[in-house]
Length: 145
Image (cartoon, rainbow, N blue to C red):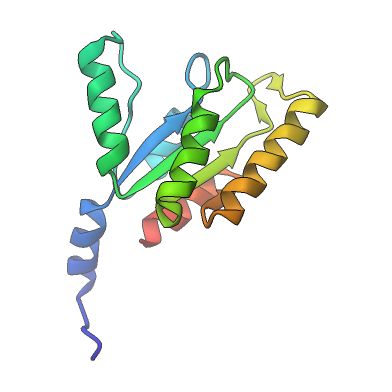
């Protein structure tokens, strides 16, 4: 039996969906580009002052958000986000999303980095996760959920 819902009900349901915005921090502005495109709730772990409380909230939200998104850009300095996306694609593949932006502002990944990241994308996809090439594609997918 199919249940029909009104457009207003669908909008209300989509507002209750939340996505964790993980990935590259630092000088990258990908969150500033993506957030205005989203019609669902999101958790942005980037805060002015990083402390134990902020870290604990990030850990909690990564576990409780409906979707976990990792956007990797050439501004990436550490590798923890790579570990997180692979871990999440194993533990909750249908809720894991990866996007690798080969260029961010005037920074670009090297050929070797692109080759490695292509393998990471393949791992996430093989585990059942979603992989997108642009922030617009991500917003379109999340807004349809």
